[in-house]
Length: 91
Image: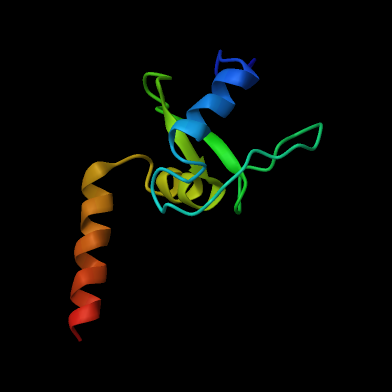
């Protein structure tokens, strides 16, 4: 709640509305139940938000969240990556 301004119930409801799956890869994901610092990598669910506006976008698995972060939410870089993968598959 402190980090994104939503309750744990709202966070869980977001994941339920996505069918318990990451909004990008579609793999099942759950929020960690351990107390303390949450792990933002791997299969654990994380609340994704826009760093510029702080608007919450959805729930992702840690892998997809890290991927977006690596591309710094730059749409053109992500599209270039898609083109790169498509061209690599042609060879």
